[in-house]
Each structure stands twice: as structure tokens, then as C-alpha cells.
Length: 380
Image (spheres, rainbow, N blue to C red):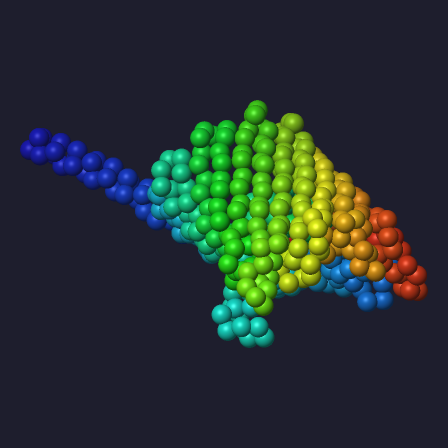
């Protein structure tokens, strides 16, 4: 009898262990997201209540002033197994339309409804080994310090580097982790910010990551692609789009972080039907980030940026269509409430151009613009 009891006990223990092991390996579902909204004052008091200025590209997402505005609504679904996972990241609202603008023309053609406009990301990862991961689908760009998701950035408004760089890609990439301090990624994508390839060329993307010391991360990112629209006679091989990007951050203390983003790009010929820029023209910029967490519920982030598009390669231009440059200073406080779900971000931003980019309420030209915003982000 005693032996039977012991046998039953060990059998039950083994079964429990087996069940726990199977449970640990079971697929996992996840659901998260956020909504954000804001109220912004523009001290120039433009009559059209717009922050966009002469070229229409002076701001990425926070385009309206002197009114309450909805930013973005995100619903993110995940499914993960031991060796693979899939992400479906759907967004809605004004900032979603701006961020996924290249998805507006769907399979039915221009002027038709496209559910693809809601797709910010939709991709899967396959962990082929402990070191090699393959990713296929639509995914956010690897370039730059900032992302579209408002809860992640220290500042609410997005930098000029972000505004003039890629937002997302559709294609395939492979990442190989040589160690936890060094990895490399390469991939092929359908050009820049496009649901459909505008020509038969593919863009080559790459990234090298290293962590030279604890708390210090360095990313060297790039893309090289022919973005020219096809000619009537066939493929246009004269266009060339190249961007090299450096992103680095260093956690100096548990409370204080410094970051840097520097980028240099060049464009030859046409860019997706936007007009031929002729011989190679360049643009670039540098942004310095600083964030200090006074407590776990209050922090202050600063960003100083210079962006140079005097050659006129990108869309940020003067009123007469010529190139321009800008320096920007942004200060953002973050208050965390509602058990970490609510972020309240008051933000002061000033942009100074070498050319007249704005007008005030009396119609007088201004070279600078200062805004004060109060932003609310609820994440779940």
C-alpha cells in the first residue's frame, strides 16, 4: 500500500512537471495599444490654425493649433510560440493616415477604399536558430532615434530627421546576433513608405548594432534604393536614394540618459514621381536628446536639432520652392498617472528657419514658430 501511494505521488509529480513544461511552451497571445490627443497653442496665431508653414512639412503629425486634436489610436495584437511570433499593429486617426500614407492606394487602385491604410505593421518573426531571425511583412523603419508610437518617445512632437526619413518598409530582413553586444541585419524592401513597389527595383536595408559598454547602445543604419518612377519607355535607372544613419544612447546614471541621432542622405534623379532633382543633392541633420527621470512618475526630456535641406532634396523647403534649413529646440515634461497608464506631456517647441516659413495672424512673414502643447496618452 505504501509503495502504491509513493508510486502515485511520483507519477502525479511527473505529470505536473510535464504539464508545466507544456504550459510554458504554449502559444501566448497579447493585446496592447494606446490613444493620444492634444491641445496646442501657436504663438504666431496663424489664421488657418496650421503649424505646417510654407512647404507643408514643418511638422510631422502635430499639425493643428488652437484646437483639441486626436492623434492616433493603436490596437496591437501578438501571437508568440517558442520559435516564432507574429505582430498585427493597426492604427487609426489623423496620425495613422499621415504615417501610413503610402498604403492609401490599395489593390483596387487610386481613389478606391483601402483597408491597408490602417496597417502600421504586420509581420512575422521566425527564429531559425538562437542567433538568426527572419522577418517578413510590413515593419517600422530601422532608421532614426524616434518612432511613430507616442508613448515611447521622450518628446511628443517628432524631429525633422524623423519627418524627412522613412516611416516603414515592406519586405524581408534577416538579423544575426553574434552576441548580446553585436548583431547585424540586412534586408530587401519595396522602396520607401510604399505598399506597392513603384518600380521593379528593390531597396537594400542594413543595420549594425553594438554595445561597447553597459548602458551604451550604438546603431549604424542605412538604405540604398532606386526610387524613380518608371519612364514611358520602361525602367528609369538614373534615380538613386541613399541614407546613412547613426543612432546612439547612453544611460549615464539610472536617472539620466543622453541620445544622439545623425543622418546624411543623397538623392539623384526622380523620387517616386515627385520630380527630378537632377544631379546628386544631399540633406542631413543632427539631433541631441537628453532625459532625466526625477521620479518614476515625473521626467523631463530635451531635444536640440539642426536639419539642413538647403539643396532642396527633401520636401521641407522655402515658400519659393528653394531649399532651407532649421534649428529646433523642444522641452517636454512627462507626468505618469493612473497606475502608469496615463502620460501627460506639456511641451514647448521652437523652430527657427533661415527663410520666412510662417505668417502670423496679421499675415506678416515670420522665420520662426513657437508652440505650446498639452498632450494626453493613455496606453493599455
